[in-house]
Length: 262
Image (cartoon, rainbow, N blue to C red):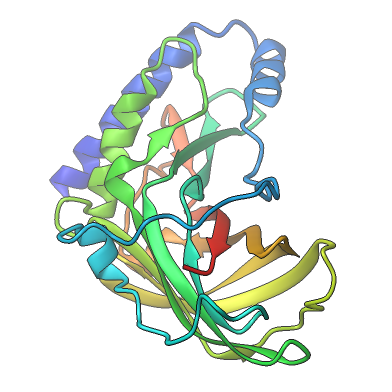
């Protein structure tokens, strides 16, 4: 408990220093609104070639070891193994509330250090999510939001401690089998809900990502989010009333995925 309190104190003291450098509530609200990083969106559908096979010994790839699917590369439909490509991204968005400021601030951190795959079965007219595994290295999360006078790198270190990243460096999502309501002949943006087990710090809980999905030029792009309560995972963040900053325990997890058949 003392360790958690010390982390909360670091967060609050740093936030308090930042507030002293922002003059006036109105100016603060305007600043927060103009510097808030946008949500992760769909990657552009540019021509891509599949990334090379995983490097032997890469622990991130070992977390979601790629299954062998004979004839996968030659298949042209939606069915088959789809592998996450470089420039995919994941991260979190946490709502912070500073003392004496009515507008909340979004703490936003992201990383492209992720790996995984999705296995789709069925047919083009009735595709099925068979299984999958997506892993994110939370040790590489870095903040994108800006607060005057505040080194967000300090928050990144605290966030890693909250997540227990030293002993549990990967967050893993494994989707449940489900019918996919997709028109595979369309390259318009479609909407899919994908439920599965979300493992944070070796604690697995159900989570559902609401995704925008586009199938175009032999690739799948998907982007969306889910909201989780840190309490469900035994994670404590500063929530005390009267402190310099309070963090909403309902955290938004965001993803933007690029998938190709290897």
